[in-house]
Length: 123
Image (cartoon, rainbow, N blue to C red):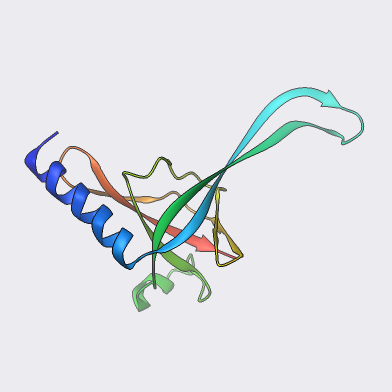
């Protein structure tokens, strides 16, 4: 860990805690198992909820140009000091509205460690 990691990870956490909102991050885990004739599938889905803080932002005009970002999408900033590792398909609930994480998270590095994640969340 570098000096930048110590300072900027703490700064990212402090700012998100101060200006962010309470949210619930739900990790969705899918496992493959034996075929279930009742459901017609061989997968099982489990969800684990974690309380986090998020800063809600908007995407810039250029982000919409390639069509990957929709107007209703939210940009969520999450401290890397939270106990989550964002993955495609996970969910974030803010004020009872559920958003799904669509592409992988963008990592912002502070040196040798990740300081925060920028998530694209879609209803």
